[in-house]
Amino acid sequence: MIRFDYTRPGDIDAAIRSGTPVDAAYLAGGTNLVDLMKENVARPLKVVDINRLPLTGITELGDGGLRLGALVTNSQTAYNEQVQRRYPVVASAILAGASPQLRNAATNGGNINQRTRCYYFYDTDTPCNKRQPGQGCGAIGGFTRIHAILGASEQCIATHPSDLCVALAALEAKVQVTGPDGDREIAFAEYHRLPGDEPWADNTLRPGELVTAIDLPPKGFATNYTYLKLRDRRSYAFALVSIAVGLRLEEGKIAEARIAMGGVAHKPWRRREAEELLVEREPGHASFDEAARALLAGAVGQGANDFKIELGRRGIIRALAQAAAGTPQSQTDKRIA
Ligand SMILES: Cc1cc2nc3c(=O)[nH]c(=O)nc-3n(C[C@H](O)[C@H](O)[C@H](O)COP(=O)(O)OP(=O)(O)OC[C@H]3O[C@@H](n4cnc5c(N)ncnc54)[C@H](O)[C@@H]3O)c2cc1C
Ligand code: SF4
Picture 1 (tube, rainbow, N blue to C red):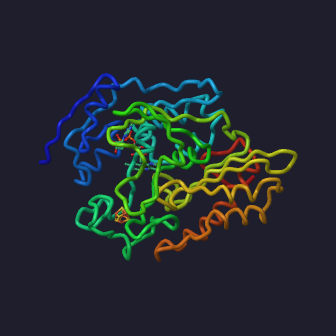
Picture 2 (picture 1 turned 120 degrees about the horizontal axis):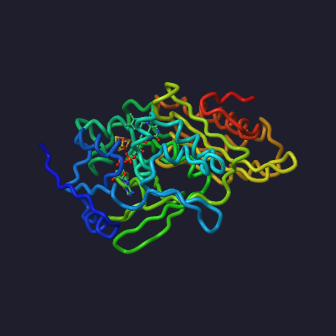
Picture 3 (picture 1 turned 30 degrees about the vertical axis):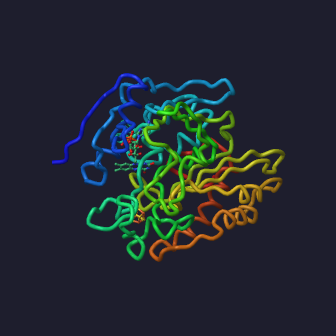
């Protein structure tokens, strides 16, 4: 049996004091952390249960945006009236993930901090640089169906598994954190990182830092959006490739475009050059294909995941077509009307 200390602080300062040792872990819904502990992948010496902290609200921001508390559950977020009306791509991405039971327990802070689903990361009999720095990567040369085609390194080819994060990347959300050195705000594009030579670090949180909220900006792309998730099963499966799109159309032309991909890299994948290719163009297959190729430029398969490059290209084109066709949009049937 592996022993660990358990604490359930009632305020944020006490939580940070408890969470500052490097071998401590914050516990929110526990749907990922507890699994990792049971599999012996995560072995924190101290578990800091944050469920008593006052981070459970969804509140209006002065700039017209919306703040999602870190402890608001994924279900509460997806069914919140403001989120559904102003940020349907967020609701759609959440509802494409996991199962109702999991979404009822999973929190927003936990979702953006969930670990990769790389099979080798979970299998402690195989080497993994993310689990144990310097061990090597069991996935390289192994079975790579779910692995990265973009931004990978020789140390790690894992992908980030979250659906919610893909929508947050497209919207340019901001992550509010607090820690031993005070409060700070992290642009969503800077929150997750590519593996490089330090694949054990999924994100740019510093030791002891706690996510308190995720801020959605005023612009929600609520009229022309989509979240398209392509996976092995229609429900209860992680994305092989997913695409979040937000478009602003003016007089039949694209005035602004956002495209983020999931399932293809260690973080949600965006490239401004791809989005800018669409600006002042009419929506249509030719411009969508150009944008897709630009977003996927440099993509390299690992063998078993080579199919993701073509699946990604086609998925981006379909997602852009859905977004351009407008809303309302079914969460489950993503055919283009
Ligand atoms: C069978 C299954 C299927 C799933 N399918 C999907 C899917 O299709 N799509 C998808 O997106 N997700 C999926 N998930 C993942 C699920 O969404 C995550 O497990 C969940 O969002 C994590 O939230 P939690 O509150 O339970 O986090 P926890 O398990 O409590 O924590 C997860 C990690 O985040 C850290 N953490 C938690 N809160 C904070 C905070 N406020 N600040 C700093 N660090 C924090 C913890 O220390 C831990 O490292 C699935 C999970 C399971 C088990
Ligand atoms: S891809 Fe990354 S997470 Fe998977 S085994 Fe290699 S180092 Fe570990």
